[in-house]
View 1: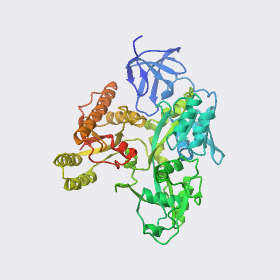
View 2: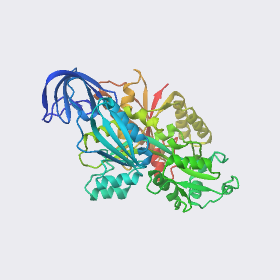
View 3: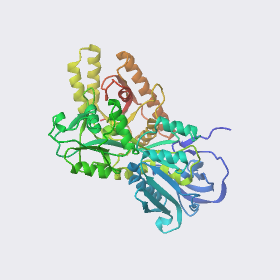
Length: 523
């Protein structure tokens, strides 16, 4: 059997038929993708549980029902789900963001979501047809008690979707395998859909503005008990923390405490909600704590100083690129079991551009590519030129300096799996997002893919490796654009090897951050 050619590969729209379908009298309908990027109009030839078959400008096409909404008299009615959609896990996601996503999805499908609080950490939703005037299409529950409870719900099969503000842990991956529930690190089961950054926050009157990892660890662990030990006022340190079930707690523990062999202070005040923690820090002189970007409130975030004296501002752009040390992704996880239609719809919606406004309304960062000039980086390179004693390096730095003044950078940044030529899960999804961004860019937009590496190995070898990786991304993007019917202008491919590090090269995490391909747009 010949393969089905794709029209819109990210949506699974193909030009041939498969599976059983119910034939219909030909009637005009309009199918619109949940993110609004694709709109198809034509005669509805048949419909099955999985696919619409439409005859239109592309001929006869097969379109997944889970990724499109149907408008027109011939559209099949939405039917009730076989069971309630159960979602469990992170309170960072579940308290406000997930309700917004469910409401946004319902609206995109011509329905409405009615919310009822079942208890302090569980919300119930009734999805009603006809903009809220019709019958219930399906019900959903969202339980938000921490990321670990999301994985527990998936393993116990009491939840269909698990929310997490941290990546799945190795021991959880093993439990999935033991339970024959698949691999949660696989792209089909791990769905990063938003960006967050953790802020280390202090009382707004505290004069300190920047702290390094060792200092923060000492403060959170209780090893440093008075701010005067760091040059601050003679004031006792008061630690506020999330519970051990929280993904936010796990992120801080893994990124700050464990590297210094420390644990959270036994005297820390434990709060179950991020907004409550932020409010407590803002009201308590001498307080320190940590929250996501969305929960800063009236507290004061501090800058982070790396081991090689790089100062990291908690900016949205740095969080999107993955270069802010405490940036993190928000995830929806599933098992390998067949998903219900509501679960499929939610995952398709949450990972599409249509969800961006809801992500940002909740105070998080969407994956919408952000563009900025590189003047600040150019000044850093100017200083490096003056300090360098290598003629080869100085020549490359001068070339980089000129480029930085002529090109803007997109926040979209590609990284590869450790020890592999394969893109990691986040970068695979970023590839699709970049293609969508470039499709909407003005004709003639000049794009460069620029490779960087860690500092291991000779300079010229690193520069060649960076160029090879940049060429790989350029080819993938060109192929994807051509599949959508666009003929992209030739991309520029550059590499500067180990120059312009965004992290320290003295540990694995820093080296991985430096092994990247950036996307530049010419002024």
